[in-house]
Image 1: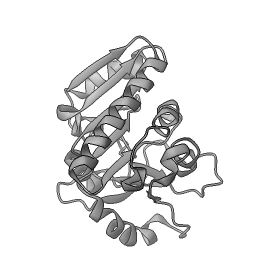
Image 2: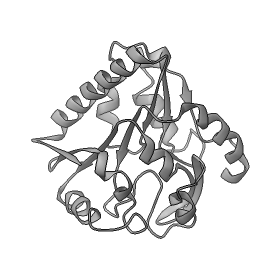
Image 3: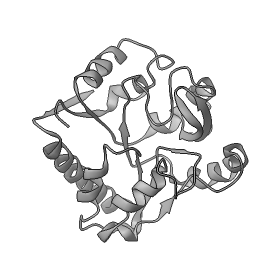
Image 4: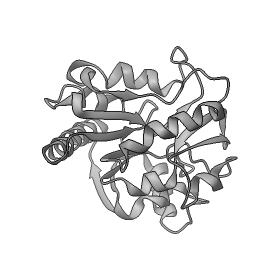
Amino acid sequence: MDLIEYPDGEMMMMDLADRLASEISTCLAAHDWASLAVPGGTTPGPMFDTLSGADLHWDRVHVMLTDERWVSEDSGRSNTALVRQRLLTDKAAAAPFLPFYTGDDTPEAALPGLIERVRPELPLSILVLGMGADMHIASLFPGAEGLAAALADDAPPLAVVRGGGAPEPRITLTAPVLRGAMSTHIVITGAEKRAALEAARRRPPEEAPVALVLRDATVHWTETP
């Protein structure tokens, strides 16, 4: 694990956006396209704002979420809505996007088709994750229904999870996909999450899902958001 500490959130988000733009550019120099998986939530918004203006061949950058709540885009809890509003704008509006919410009654109904759409994007070129104080990443929540299946070495690229403090079902990238990313960044703020990060280094993924990716990840942290 490589830990980078920042004096404040603004500097962290600007530096992360620059790093991601550089990694995307390097990937595109060697490959026809790059796959970029990003988190939802409010934390990455400022980074999205900066990254969206980067001068890249965005039409060759395939964007997806790390996880999605099973809600429509007009919901305030939709990760897709956030990504469309904050990342897929400006120059990044040209990027192809793979949403996980399909409008089906249940995520299970949509899962087979989504899995087939995700497989060609693997391994992920760049993975960006947040982490909760409970040490969850994507929608891999300790104690959630479906967690064990999503953590399995032979898990398909996507899984449905329920519970673990989340009020609605979710679709999430699974352990093999997260571990297999070519480059992984984790973004956290505050003393509580820093303490959780340190604790996760001594726990198994079943208790601390972030432990799945810590060995090879670059962690970006600031005490002041």
